[in-house]
Image 1 (cartoon, rainbow, N blue to C red):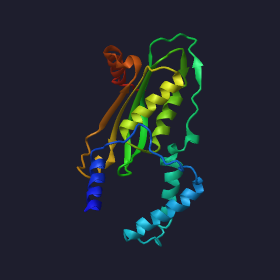
Image 2 (cartoon, rainbow, N blue to C red):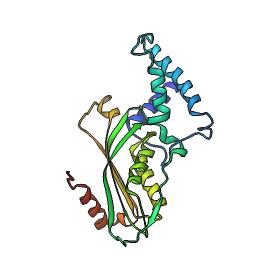
Image 3 (cartoon, rainbow, N blue to C red):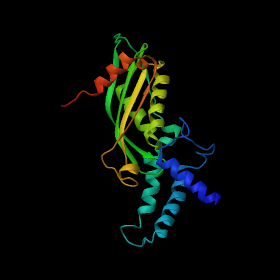
Image 4 (cartoon, one colour):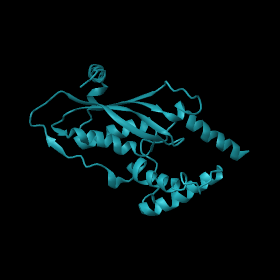
Length: 225
């Protein structure tokens, strides 16, 4: 009975989209194994899952799947777990004295829901007001990509992006809005293909209504080339 109750608790946690921390939960020994060692272990686990489902791994189309999935997990979609892959974000003096907010919108987000290991796909919009330093535009995209490439909940991802840029830029005046579709909602469970999830994190001046409104108005602009 206790085991059944625990399973029900886990199911409820995933369906309600509850996160446990603003930091990605990692064990202390998370990087004890090399990437290649992790790939070998995961490869066997994927093979076991597929065989349990009744798939014939001697088929040419399936024989390489365990290795492909293992490499994808370690080196691609969960590569952001490794702090060594954290993008270096060099800052520069704001010599041109630009004092208004800078907005980088429509940054592509590809992440993975940590409750069902299904994709999260959407757009992130970031803004900051310089406190004397600026950061390269592409670095904001790279920061989003780094924190997205791990098992995530969207709330945590939004907070992590803001915290990282606050540290890099040495200012609290940072904001992030993410609008994304979750395939754990779109392709299973309720299977609502139209819904998306919007999260936001506002720091410093962006907590003020006028500044927040200005940012939200900017990201509504329809940019076409």
